[in-house]
Image (cartoon, rainbow, N blue to C red; front, top):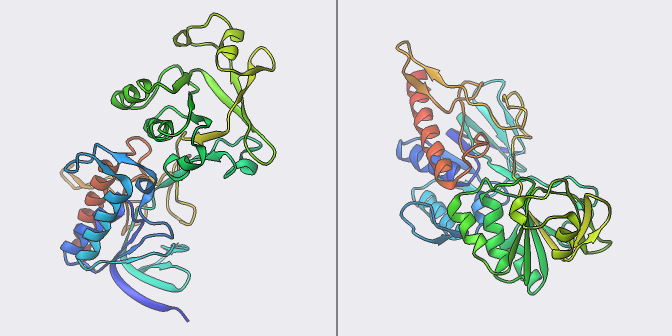
Length: 340
């Protein structure tokens, strides 16, 4: 028989958004519980050097999250290392179920973040963990002295490249466009690495190998002027590849790190409005004078959202923390106005 516990606010997620929200709600005197998930800490647990979180200069991602969690627990907030299995929003109090607990909350903050988006090519599932990875900090050890590739063009791809380039002999960064989306400072760091080469305008058609990755099947429709080659054959030969037809070729690699984006963790939420990509929709509310009243509301009164689970654009630790702060402020105002 499950034990029911009632809280002013239940926070789902334990990345920068969820933990920041918990700091504020606890300081408001609201009884707070954080349902952290089986793997707590969000994407920063998979990051090495963090150099853009104010006040820390340079810090490892897991260390930053440990400090945040220590801060939260030091305030007396209960952090549960369990995964939420369902959220019942058809009536109040809201009900969150885990494997062995039923939690009731007057409000809920959804801060469940987002996980790796995979390539979706035929052999990816078979070779995941056998050369195909999404976490260079986790798996770099296995690729010491080997030839690898990183797929992507955003900040995450640059971070993965910097990590794996420290141990791999040769790194090819593969991007489907002609220009990167990542911050210029991060791109500059990657381009300065002596063992990193870039393939522009190139897409991954599949990964190759039986029991372990041996290569990547690529498609290059238009050669970027940045490559410095006049023909497709020159490009393929320069990278040590094998031509298949006029646009397809195979690049020999022993590892590939996928960094092409994230998928929001919204699968368990029923009745919560999400967009076509699965991100939670925010519903901004203004007062009778047109002044913004709530910024982090969802379509369900009393349920708020924060961080990468709704933010498809910025996706930074500091913006996630900011959203967590806003969600907590909205919760406090909501509880005051509704008299809950």
